[in-house]
Amino acid sequence: MTEYGRSPGSEPWHPGDPLYGDQGWDGRQQYPHPQQASQYDQGGHVHQDPYGQGGQEHGGDPYRQQPQGYADPQHQQQYYQPQYQQQQPYDQYQQQHQQQYGAGQQGGYDTPGHLGQQYDGTWETGQAAMAYGTPPADPYGGQNPDLYGTPEAYPPPRPPGHRQDPPEPVVDWAPEEEARREPGPEPEEENHPFFTGEDDRDDDAYDDEEPARGRGSRGDDRDRRGKEKKRKGKNGVACLVVAVVLVGGVGGVGYFGYQFWQGRFAEVPDYAGGGTGEVQVEIPKGSLGTQIGNILKQAGVVKSVDAFVAAQQRNPDGNSIQDGVYTLKKEMSAESAVALMLTPASQAKLIIPEGKRNAWVYETLDQRIGLAPGTTKKIALTKADSLGLPAWAQKHPDIKDPLEGFLFPASYPVAKGSKPEDALRRMVTRANQEYGKLDLDAKAKAVGLKDPWELLTVASLVQVEGKYKHDFDKVARVVYNRLKPGNTETVGRLEFDSTVNYLRGQSTLDVGTVEDMRKIDDPYNTYRMTGLVPGPISNPGMEALQSAISPADGPWYYFVSINEDKTVFSVTNEEHNRNVAEYEKQRKQGQ
Image (cartoon, rainbow, N blue to C red; front, top):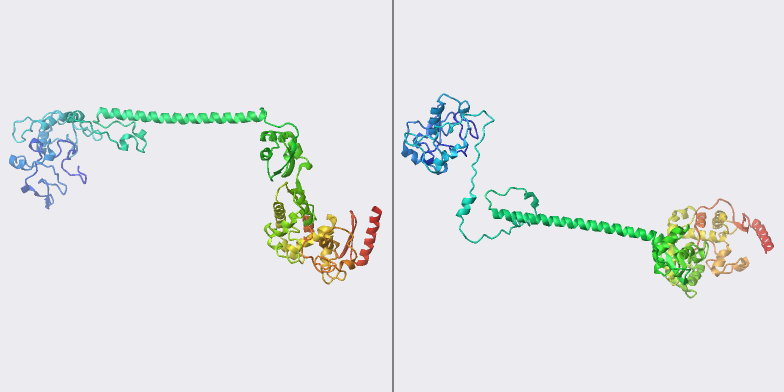
């Protein structure tokens, strides 16, 4: 059976079989005579048979033999082929096969008309011996014995599925090659990474492979030794890694165990007593126990961070220590430091009350920092634009202090020796944060004002004029009613004593008569000028600002606080005068 179709003739032997094809004498293949190259097939068509053998249909058997009567040794010798040495002619095989099994039998064919591919390994002792030494017998009357006349040459056929290809002969060529090797120096050892083991591939994949057939024992030993060294190296590295991991784990457990024991049972370094001297420390916002302990240790207050943290945890109020500046002593015990920080006397904070003017803040900063009087005020007036004021608070004419209203009432850490501009910047920043929570521009327009600056100015008036917070909403309404130009009571003037006190830089109830105050020519004199003052006259709190945003409804133009629980509001000036008389009476009784 060929690769492209099955011929009705006999099936060729496997190409590995020494009997494959037509062989002549001495294992040389014979080819047909050129004169017999053309034959007719069964259909009457000329069929070119390249082997000179009649084909059947278009698949003639290329191994079909010439008639037995044709035995021209000279012709056969003409077509010897070295490629097919050590083989027997096909016609001899066919003749002997017919003699042994009979021409009419099909026992030697696996299917009708096809020769079964049977093979016996005994050809190595008989046929191979002939191929290498004894010339084959003449198929047409020679004297050589018939090598195919024995039963071993053609064993009985086997059923399909049980047939096997002949095993390939195993040739041990290593001894012969070693014997033919000429004596001389050993070849230089191969240094390619593939042989030296430096290849990037995983060498372990080749460890279990069987050595190549015919390889010398010396190379095998060298490979085995190289692989053993490589395995030992890898095992050593693995052991080293495991050892490092174990040592690191034991060391880590030991370190944390020591820290736990040190924190729980061991004594930590600590001073004894209440300390001496004086030192100020500033605790940033959001600082925790360890951070506070580090600051105190660096300042020389406590001896160790662990001592302070332990003392803070033992004190029930230890976690209530807040940010700020504290005046403490050096070399204090941790327990004494915690107790002192919890007392208000140690807190070096500057607290700005609501309604205080900037002048008061400047004087207090000079005293707290240790500067000459007037130092902070000078810095404030010259560096106001660099302290963080919003755009709507800049470039207003006739104002006495551009920072007025922006030193927000709160508590600020101020340590001795610090810079005043740092404290002022903190206050302005806090004001921006609080004012930024409100839409001041929209709120100002809702109450008939131009911008947030005017709204802040109204809030500063409410803060100073209203003595009590529960009166702020009504005081804010009085401000807006007086600002109306068409009112018949004040004709657009505010007429507040607080504005006169501001321009005078004082704080008193005895400002003089109305006639005397109207003589003062100043933009802040509300007895003479109509409308709002140029800017805020104090630092209002959030309550006063909210009252300026949402004033109470009412027709009031006047008010007077009789006492802490009583503030009287009136619509007309006559009613207001009666309320003032009542106020004077109660004030005299209280003296």
